[in-house]
Structure formats: structure tokens, C-alpha cells
Image 1 (cartoon, one colour):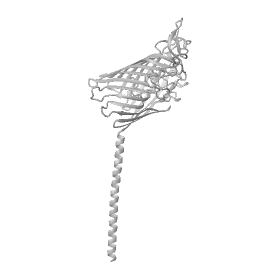
Image 2 (cartoon, rainbow, N blue to C red; image 1 turned 90 degrees about the vertical axis):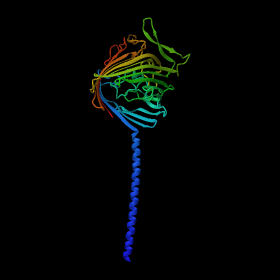
Image 3 (cartoon, rainbow, N blue to C red; image 1 turned 180 degrees about the horizontal axis):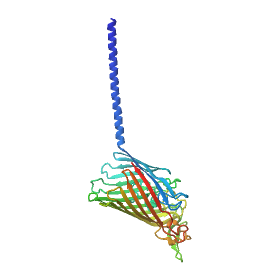
Image 4 (cartoon, rainbow, N blue to C red; image 1 turned 30 degrees about the vertical axis):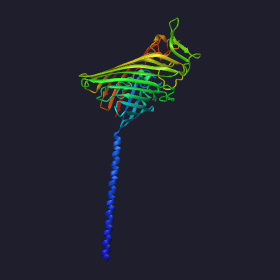
Amino acid sequence: MKTIVRSFTSLALMTLSLTAFGQNQTATVDSLKKSLNSLTSDVEALKNLKIGGWIQAQYQWTETKGAKTFEGGDFLANSNNRSVIRRGRIKFTYTKGIGQYVLQVNATERGVNVVDFYAKVTDPWTKAFSLTAGIMNRPFGFEIQQSSQERETPERARFTQVLLPNERDLGAMITFQPAKGKKLYGLKVDAGFYNGTGIAVPGTTSLNGAGVVDFDSYKDFIGRAHYKKSLKQDKVTLGAGVSHYNGGVVYQNNKVYSTLATDSLGVMSWAVSDTTNGTTFKGGKAPRIYYGGDLQFSIKSKLGTTSIRGEYITGTQTGTVDENKSPSSLPTKPDAVVRNFNGGYAYLIQRIGKTKHEIAVKYDWYDPNTKVTGDNLVGTNGMTKAELKYTSLGVGYNYYMTENVKFMVYYNMVTNENAKALTGYTTDLKDDVLTFRMQFRF
């Protein structure tokens, strides 16, 4: 009897053990399935995310300690050479369906700032129209659109840095760009409204509340139409564009300097328009109106790829007595000075055969006041360094070591218009800059 009981007990225990084992196996398989599904979902999400970036480490030398320069910001008062991280970028782009999210951050020894931060939505029907809102490149000219990691010279032209500093601004833009295979493929039209202040970048902008945040009620319109076409199996590439900027800043008082007067000795000076007792300037819109055109041409031959680019800009710029740069914060000097200007650049870039070596030559100029010359700056007529024309001739060498690594050597020769009797500007300033740069991108 005891034997029978023990047998049944053993059989029951074996049955319970097998049942528990089977249940554990089922639970394990279900758990694995859930984990696998979760992992698959995460991988699919990661496929939509693209991460890239680049770092530009460089050494620079200039002719004079404390030189004022547009080659990455002014030198410190007691230094004529420096080692800096010019740009340290990391960019996140998440794309899903018709939407896109972009965040790009710049980190250097001078600080951290947001470069791009916008959302983009493309129409699901034609896929030719899109709406972008946030912090982004201003759609003006070619050089602003070209990424700093691709550019063959260290910095953009002087006029770009003066009129459209730090390239980006906060606003919203509509884009028309037909997809490949469509009738108007190659055409891109951008049009948007922006705060007009630009972004603040540590080391190149005063950060006292400056950048992105608008300091008046006026919004600036920016538009560009560009067409690009490749010929002869992509051996020849042509591009052309036109741009327009229509904006302004608030008049802070009733005194505006926009016309010039000449005295009996032939000396020119600003003539003030004062509307204290008449039509009021104060609170009105001081103009910033630009017109631009750009051309690009490249051809592949046995000599290598030869590229020629040019851009021209003209218009009206409101500044102050001693400043012609577009303000990123409300100017501390309230009197507005309205100037007519022009500027431009020309590039010649030659890739040497099928090698990794490249030569780049660039000429650019910016004349902030086309109505006067250096002879009009006599030091007693209220005119300042803000009227002086600058030209630059730069020569550089690029070595594309790998797809990710580029080395650059560039010497920029800067020439200022000589003033007749303006202290510090009667001769050419010693402000040429030599740049050695290493870039790595991923």
C-alpha cells in the first residue's frame, strides 16, 4: 500500500514539475517576443534619426596685436595669434513621413549656442511645397546657403557678416522645390518672414540680450529664387539666383541722417532730418532693403574641377554714426544713419586633376557708403570709420585627406580705404590674417 502511495505521489510531483516547466517556457517565449518587438520598434525609430557634425580646430596669426577682423572675430588686445575651435557642431535630424525636426548646436571654448532649431512639414500631395518654422539659415544669396564644412575658405565675405551676421534668424519660410523628374526640377524658391536680429554666437556677438529675440514690432521679408542645372553627364554645372531682403529697425527718435550736404569748401557731411515738429520718425521703420544676385559655374576636365562663383549685393542699410552692421539688439545710439551700399565676391577654385589637392582664390569687397570716399573723411564733419570701404584678396590651399578629414591653409589680405584725415585710418591697417585649419566631420 505504501508503495502505491509513494508511486502516485511521485507521479503527481512529476506532473506538477512538467506543467510548471511548460508554463515557464511559454512565459520566456512571450517575454522574448515582447523584447524583440520593442527592439524592432526602437531600431525603426533610429532609422529616422541622422546624427552628424564637424569640428574646425585652427591656429591664426595677424599682423598687429588686437587687430579687428572678420576672420572669426577680433583678436584680443595683447595678442596677434591664437588657437581656437572655430566651429564645433553636432546636428540631429529626425525625419518621419512629411515632417522633419532639426537641432544643431555649436560648442567652442567661447561657449555654446543653438545654430539650427526648426520643424519642417512637406505637403503630402505634390511634395513640392514645404513650411519651415524656427531658427534657420536666412534664404539670401549662395554663400549663406553653403555649409561651413563645405566652403573652401575659412569665413564668408565681409558684406555677409555685416548685413546678415551669423547667417541664421528666427522666423517661418515657405519653399517651392519640385522633386526630381518633375518639369521644374532644379528650381528652388524660398520666401519667409524673420525677426531680423539674427542669432548670437559667443565670441562674435555681444550677448547682452542680443540675438533671436526681436526688439521691435517689425518683421523682415527675405526671398530667394535659384535654379541649378547639370549638363553633359554632370561634367558642367550651372546655377543662378536672385535674392531680396525687405525689412528694417525702429526709429528711436526724430533725428535721421540720410542725405549729404556739401559746404563752400567742398566738404561733405550728414544733413539731419528733424521731425520733432512735423511728421514723426520715432516709432517708424528705418529701412534695411537689399537686392542680390549670384552665379555658379563648374566644369570637370583633365585639369580637375574648375569652379567660378560670384555674388553682388546692393541696397540701403540703417545703422548709427559709427556702426554699419545689422543690429542684434537695440542700438545704444538712437540717431539713425541711412546709407546706400554695395558689396560682392568672386571665387576661383581649382581641384588639381584627380588628386586630393585644391587651390582657392577669393576677392570680396564691401562699401558701406557709396556716396562718399576716403577723401570725405576729414575728422571734423561727423563721418567715421563706418563709411570706409574694405576689400580682401585671399589665397588658400585645401587638402582633402579622407572623406572626413580636410586641412586648410589660407592667407587673407585685407585693404581698407584710406581716410583723408581720420585718426587711425589714413593708411592701410595691418590686419592680414593667416589661418591653419584642421577639420573632421562625421
